[in-house]
Amino acid sequence: MKKNNEHTELMNLLTRYLAGECSRDESDWVDQWIKTGPENGKIFRDLKHVWDGMDMVEDIRSINIDEEWASIEKRITESDTEMSPLKVKYRSERIKRFSLLRVAAGFAIIALTTFATIYFTRNSGYEKVRTAMETKEVELRDGSFVTLNTNSLLKYPKKFDKESRELSLRGEAFFNVVPDKTRPFIVNAGDIEVKVLGTSFNINAYKDNEAIEVLVSTGRVAMSSVKQQDKRIVLDPGNMGTFLKSESSFIMEKEADKNYLSWKTLEMEFNNDKLSDVIKILEKVFHTNIILKDPGLENCRITVSFDNQSLEAVINVLEATLDLEFTRKDDTIEITGPGCEPN
Image (cartoon, rainbow, N blue to C red; front, side, top):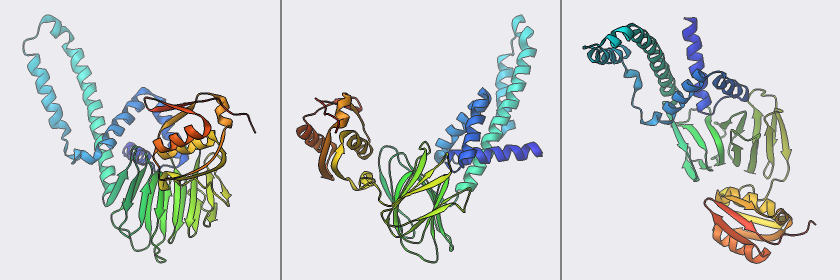
């Protein structure tokens, strides 16, 4: 019984890990568990394969292990009907190997069955929206809108309950929340929780980032640590809160970067900014890789603004203004030019 409980707890933890709902400590534990041995790594890869294709699986709980194994045994027996002396010699060893294989196969199917049960239980009544290299807007049942950035995952209930509107985010998204004083809007984003009544704000919570950032456009937002609820900050319009994962601490900036939401608005404004900083914004907005071939180019500065213009149009302006040359190589853009002196 104890082993069954431990097994279920492990499957629950792996499920939350794949869903991006683990705390940092839990994620670190799973990462270490995967590296402990090749068996653990294989189990995790198998479970991830099931997770990635779970939406297409009707119900793997219908698998009958005994029937599946009986079919395999029958095929093995039929293939050994006419055995040569060599087959006779190794048949007993082969049976032992297949017996071990049956135990392993049985465990794998039980593990996947448990995993599927947890998955369907946890996800019944929920919607999931994933993005790859595109952005996507989602309208929630309460009339709120969520705009997802690339490589992001939003999980939300098909119907909010009477006390709160709670959902989870992995990646980056901009929220425009319909006010409702009776039901706070709560976003679980890994190590932090964001709570509002009605406002618009942006959350950047990619798993691999060292920090989680929240920028408020309108209204007020409470940003708190999941593990230490007493650690919290309240953000007003224009404020940006940063949660440092390694230190489990908050930093608040009164005035956020004016181009922070450019990925959504496609509006960019540069005022004597270094070209290296401009490139970082362009990479995020246009989801492309840009390389400065000459280190001296980083010192070049530019004052310009763009409003919903294409990457090609932006490149043309930069080429003409700074005497640069842009060259495309596969998925990368290389920039060459005379460079500028530091100032």
